[in-house]
Image (cartoon, rainbow over all chains, first blue to last red; front, top):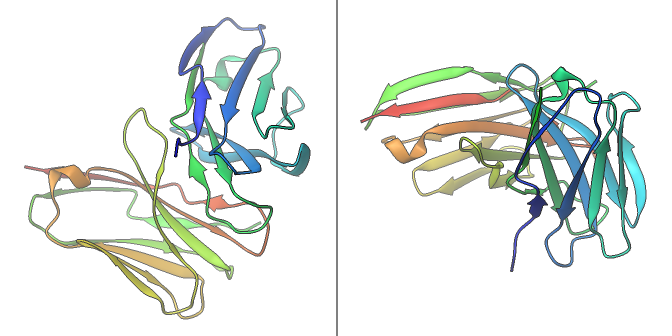
Length: 113
Length: 110
């Protein structure tokens, strides 16, 4: 079955703009989590959604937000982009609310100029 | 805050050599996962270990979960250039979010 699909794969934005990234989980998976990966900080947890509800949230400013739809697809939004937001944004899914094994998509590369 | 420390951070060895990567924490984890990530791609799950002392083998890769479920190791036998990548360990306590180590960047030279 298809894996986790993220779009777009690459994008360039200007400081101050906002961006929306999309994630389609593995079919049947209802939990979606988002991570930011940078060379300096590694993989950092942003938030997790299950059945359209945010279950966990990482230590990121309010400019970072997300949502999940009834079909389990998820989007994350970053407003008022800063240069430091340049990163690989990874989405991961798992089947249920419990269990810790997650499966990643290929990521969305965001460059802020 | 749970922390996972991986060592070494960088490792460059010749093809055919053996190596071990470590993942350590002061916290107890209900499970621990190892991922490999290649440049420009997302991490790919290699293995999940659940039981203290558990050993799992994946071809030339051997994963071990510590008896106290606070640490793990990844041993690669006869490394090949295709093993090159960023190796990440991730653990969680109960249903909490996964915590990732900083990763070990492995380079296997032909």
